[in-house]
Amino acid sequence: MKELIIHDNEAGQRLDKLLRKYLSEAPGSFIYKMLRKKNIVLNGKKATGNEHLKKGDSVKLFLADDTIAKFQAAGKTVEESIKNTVKLDVIYEDQNVIFINKPSGMLSQKAKETDVSVVENVTAYLLESGQLTRENLKTFRPSICNRLDRNTSGLIVAGKSLAGLQQMGELFKKRTLKKYYLCIVKGRITEPAHIRGYLVKDEKTNRVSLSKGGFSKDAKGLPIETEYVPIAWNEEMTLLKVHLITGRTHQIRVHFASIGHPLAGDDLYGGHRDRIARQALHCARQSFRVPAYTKVPGGIRLETPVEEHARTVGVESPLPEDMRALLDAEI
Image 1 (cartoon, rainbow, N blue to C red):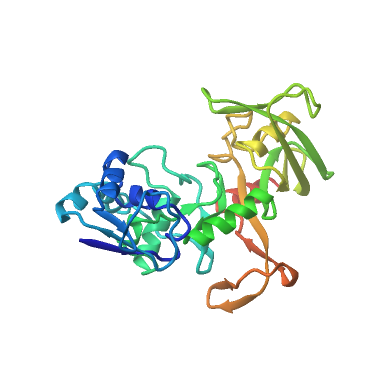
Image 2 (image 1 turned 90 degrees about the horizontal axis):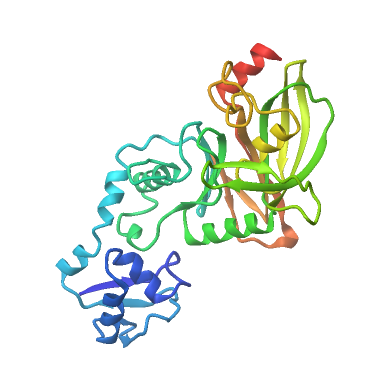
């Protein structure tokens, strides 16, 4: 018999969802059969799987150890995936979230089973620091809350707990978390601007383009908005601070290409890699509202949100060496 006591990271979800995570290789029909036969019970009573779990609930599995092990075969993948992880550049961390300075070349999420992405690196970090155990990973997995293109560097946030994932997800959904990028574009831009359009994605080529309908009611695609302010420039290049109001695939890259200023190094949208080996784009700052904070070594710890006492917290990442070298050489 195996007993699971529900903690914060499991509370709030349905029982059948928890069981699908814990017995990740088991077919749904097996799980529901075990519930019907009372081989799996909730708080000592028969359950259907529709019940929403509360902290402190007890889930007992009257199954052989071999059966449980067989249906947890996917757990071996965790061990394999964290073998090739690297040390993370942690910019900010509290009990629920962690902000990472992602280097260019690292995937936000893996595209195939053998990939090692930010998710695997965060998982390894939490395991090594004792913030998660391998047993925890059977019912909860840390995950990222925003994505960056593989060759875009800068800030990416991950949820260390269910509460962290939910809180950051709500901030991104309501657009109360503000994202600022630094980029280097071709040509000279001397005035700030607010540009809009509609984005259309070609799934086959993974390219996006602006709809010919501009920002009219007849335009097709997803609406996008981008604000930018020039910081430094010469006749050939401009360093811009960009406020990403909407967050669509390749938004900054295609928006500047559409106005004749492709990003340096972005050969997918008209830039050239003769001076930098990837698109010159870096997520440099994210800011969000919190009620209060306590300074701790190496960062800030958030307290329970109360909006009327909220203040803005900004997390920043320095310009990476390749973009700084390009600036030093050109501007």
